[in-house]
Length: 484
Image (cartoon, helix red, strand yellow):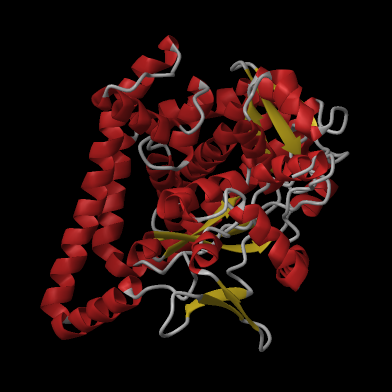
């Protein structure tokens, strides 16, 4: 082998073999150990040896040539060529299989990492975070990537230093560099890439506990109207609202016995007839609550890319995507999260005063009382830090610990398994406190729902429930047509 061929073999080792499962599938020839590669698009088939077929099983867009070669060596020992996978790649290119796959995949997904000097999109920029890390923000696709100082330096040199020299320059492995490039591509940070779309798994009944339906992009509307209400974030407004809420809180506290009595009286008089107006007023409160989040984020220069419906146990609500708030300071994030709660408290106070000034027994008295009740009910529900509502994200913003729940679980997992704990000392007591309460809450909620749904189903629709469960089990356990 000459010098040029050796260099080619070396260059191939760190290449990620493409995912061919969308357009090709493997089959076994009867009576021999050879395999065939069948096109899912046209009537084409190609034969390969057993070792080549074994290697093709790893062409799923995740493994490098070197990794697949190692797997093949473990399977076939010295019975195969030390350059089997490189030769297989060249064979696929010669046959036109690989060229067709790459062309189709780029057209369908447009998510491949650029192979020639990848560089950042012109729109992305850095945001320094007080927590000691950096956020790379992509306002075009509204995506983010949290990185360390070292990774920031590597990313900044993309397009300036040849990609094969970056690892040597910053003393990292090719695997680490490749993973960083994959993260950049998956978040649409690199030129010619778009954010990766999450693949949907098989349906599970647990998905009915919480799912979202995207409706539209509210950002243009928010941009057109934010200047009209910027006075809401001024100091005089803050002083007025603080005084208003304090006085309202004092009045409400002194009238708590009367409020409870009126609530019991209304429920006794109207019963289930109150459900519909209460639900409608709750929807109004939640909608204004979400507008509070959205306009506050827009006031601080953020992007609100979507608003939609959120279903919790099939009960509809509204959600707003405010993930861009992660690029704000800790105080800014607290204001964005707290704005929704503030709106709810203001609506509760308005309901309280309307109830006080309206004549007893009138529609205004009843409606204002229900408005106050709906606002306070949603505040109590929303401020729970153990569920992923505003209370949780407020705790994240206050502590500065992103992914608080998962990190608390990982903290205990590492501690119990004897693995090193990477968390800073100042965060450990927070994670140690939050973890057990979060686990207990999750088990309590899921246990309550599972028990009551199971009990109701077995009493009211036992055969229907069993048939549905059996059918879902077959569907869920049946192997997917997608090659693994």
